[in-house]
Length: 323
Picture 1 (cartoon, rainbow, N blue to C red):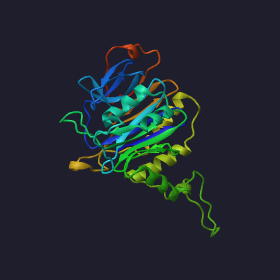
Picture 2 (tube, rainbow, N blue to C red):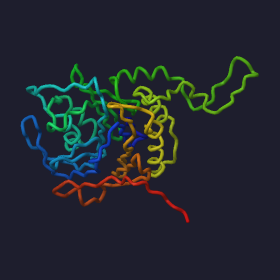
Picture 3 (cartoon, rainbow, N blue to C red):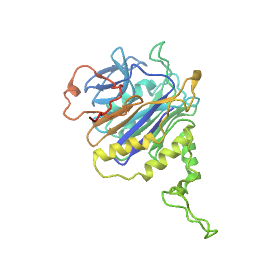
């Protein structure tokens, strides 16, 4: 499944929730001027902007799950099973595959406004990477410092929605999640005032959150992440903001044993990450190692390399033993 948020102005990120391991997941930097071939017509494109993100690399191709470019534009793909639909090649459109969407947009665009203009002419086509890697049914959240949108390719075609809630989960389509939030307009961090009997006292903090969904289904995670993110308070500095971002996503994280997915396997939050457009940094932790690991594109010599830069995930739990 998965949940993504935009925290404040500068921070974006997601939980990647799956019922199977992703042993080939890496942190990958795609440099400026890197060449990629588009499958529809074998046209070669040049990456105008360097990209950092979480990806699997196959034959020198970065298959990004989520990423940010050096201009601070962020995109994440989230599961959209049963709703996503991809099409045959269409004339007079930019025909790209779903696995090409993230590098194509981030390599070409500096902000959401430019991306919207480009997406107006995009057709997502039904061509897999290879016979061992079929297309994943996805929708995408895209953000910069000023805007946040959702991109969905369904039976009705490609739709682009403004996302004022700065949150995305999975099924169903995004307009449902917007409408569903109307049922939770009463949620607030204050205590609920008892109007009926002065002898009935509030016995616990948090009564303003009564009715906040506690489940792990997509619609529940969407509401809980949206509420937690919108009420979030922290100091105004990168360390505090990044820490708060991870706490917010932890509120919808999946613990092994709580959800059984396909093939009777347990679904877990494989990793959580945070991208900062302020410092052009990526922070992440994994299910097995909660310590944050960080990278930055600022003054990074690899952005002018002629090849991908690939880092293994730090998976072993890092415990600070005090003696």
